[in-house]
Each structure stands twice: as C-alpha cells, then as structure tokens.
Image 1 (cartoon, rainbow, N blue to C red):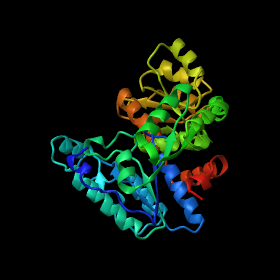
Image 2: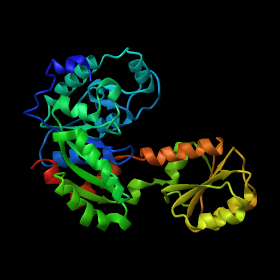
Image 3: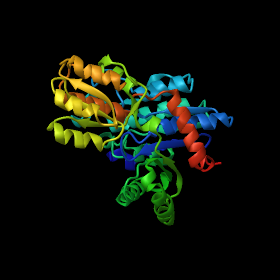
Image 4: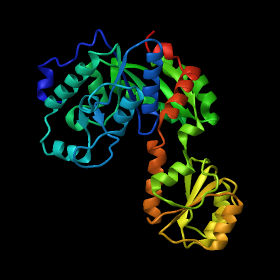
Length: 368
C-alpha cells in the first residue's frame, strides 16, 4: 500500500447511500448481469439506483482512451444520466498498467479520482451498485483491488463464485479472508445440475458455519452460458456458407486435428459444440457432420469446402461458418466470445432477474 494510506483517512462517508460492490473470483462468472439485475430489482422496489465500475477492464481496444463495454451497457440499460468518466474513473488498460509499473500513475491520485466520481454519482441515488474488475487481485499495482475499493467507498461486498468441485470452497474462504468485514455474502452462479445438490446440502451449510452467508445458488442457464451460432458468426466475422439452425446454442469448442476415426469418436462424446477445423480437412468435416452433439462447423484458413460437404450440412440443417484466420487464432477468438459474454443484452439481464428472484434471497442481498 502507499505510504500516505496510514496517515490519511480516505474512506468515503456513505451513510445515506447504500453501496454494494459485486465482485467475483474470476472472469466471466456473470458478475455484470447480476449487478445490473440487482439494480433493476432495487429500482422496481422504488429505489433510485446508480452504477459504477471503478476499474474499466472489458475494453474495446488496448490503447488510448478506451472505454469499458459494461458501464456503457449499464448507462443505457438503467437510463443513467451520468458521464462515462464518473461511471468508469480508471481505464485499466494494458497501456495504463505499463505506465503504473513505470511509476507514472499515482495511487493516491487515482483513489481520489475514484472517490470523487463515486461522490458525484452517490449524491443522486439511494443505492449504488459497484462492479468489480474481474478478479479480486486486479488493481493491486495501484492499490485499487476490489478489497481496496470496498474500503475506500465503505461498500459491502457480494461475491459471485463458480462451483464445480468441493475444492473450489478454498477460493471462497481465501476471498473472505481478503475482503474481511466488507464481505456481505456469496452467490454461486452457473451451477451444473450434477453438483447442485451437493453445493446446497453440504457446501452452503459449511460456509455458513464459517460465518459466510450464502444468498443464492443459481443453476446453469443455457441462454447465459452459451452463444448462438448466429451471434458467434457475427463476432467472428464469418461467412455463413450454410445457414442452418443459427439459433442453436454453442457452449464449447472441439478442435478437429486428429485422424478421422478418432475424430468421430471424440465428436460423438461432445454436446452443444462447434467443431473448428481447417477448411481443407474434408475427412474431419465429414466426421463432425455425423456427430449429434455438433451444432456448427467453423472452417479456418479461408478454404472453402467441397460442394459435397456443403450439401450434407444443408441436409442436416447444420450451419457452416468460414473464417480467414488460422485454427489457433479462431479457437482463441471463439472461446473469448463465450467467456466474455459478448451476447450480453437486456434479455440476459431479464433472465438473471428471474434466476435471482427464484434462487436467491434478494431481500437479504439488498439489506431489507
């Protein structure tokens, strides 16, 4: 921490504005959708709500005056009359990080900037929802981790956590240690059916026995965990050779880089997948067309497949996408689309409102 932190009390007095910081253990846990859904639920109860993302991390570009997509979406969704420099006071871009490492960013000045922006927003609202930066430790270079922000703005923290195996509880306990008294409770999101009962019946009682309230366990929702073939094609800038069922959801990717026999066995074990392979790999394309869990073919390298392949795909109503990038680049871009929730829109927040209302204690989260 900076030397002056021990000498000056920089905590904001927010006695008239309830402040909730929605943070997460890792990226793409549904943090934005949960923050905005809670804001709308609070507004439906008659509250005047505001939003702020102190550190802009979901950037549209890596250099210059970039803007985070989340505050822009929040301003539109919540119809906020606020300036972007207040909604996103720190643009946490790669360029910013490099400057901070070189000592060209002053942590105290940045904290002042965040506090002043918050005070501007809080003056007009009963409650302000803050969105964290994607993972707890992000911002440590300039003393602006989510724990630091909670301290600075006297916010209570809602931790959004994933859950797949019992060992994931270690991460929740570590986060509780870091957040200290600011941690208000936990919401588990995107929980698969296979582990839902274990989480509710064993893990939740354990955490509550550790004085860590669990406010909800939200089940996996296909429309929130995947991306439609049509949206995927748009994001990749793909040429749609066969239109097919573009409303089908893709939740994972399978790479065709093995022999045809092995590929067919592999593809048959997958579900709701897009197969990514070279446009010149006809044997792998044929194998993918025979697998029931494949939702589309993404062909790389700009190589157009044979008419026979396109004809088979059309018969099966299976979309075929053609991109000019190589297979590795395409995989990285496609996975980023699913991870970053590029299909986020008002319908996503609508569905998250329903999930919170049905599977979480919204009253407890809002402190009512």
